[in-house]
Image 1: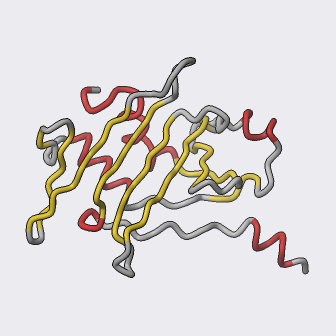
Image 2 (image 1 turned 30 degrees about the horizontal axis):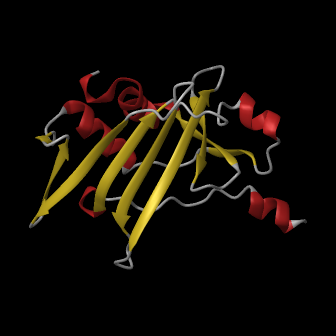
Length: 162
């Protein structure tokens, strides 16, 4: 058995993100034709064992959208590998040449070091059960369940107001 192909399509383990370990979350929607999409930035403030979240100076800790987003970000996982060596055409078909959303999470790793997780989210599957994704500059295309990405996609499209 050729283990190299197996290894290429092995699902990467995403870091175990606990809310208390996250320092900031930056979400961008699809970029307009010119320029960069505006970002929603959530910044954590830790006091003892409690975490509060701020966006544009406002405390958004109790905001339902923020709570749903945090819950889903701590549960992110890949459902399967779609293409471990995609062509440019495959990247475009999956909507990852111009992602619908990008999230960057700065967090403290288990080792105590600062780390960043970047996830790009492309188009939906025809049956709408999942979305094509990429992680941390890896060219491999993975699939994530739509339900885990719904709050992220709402924030990317509408900010915290939508």
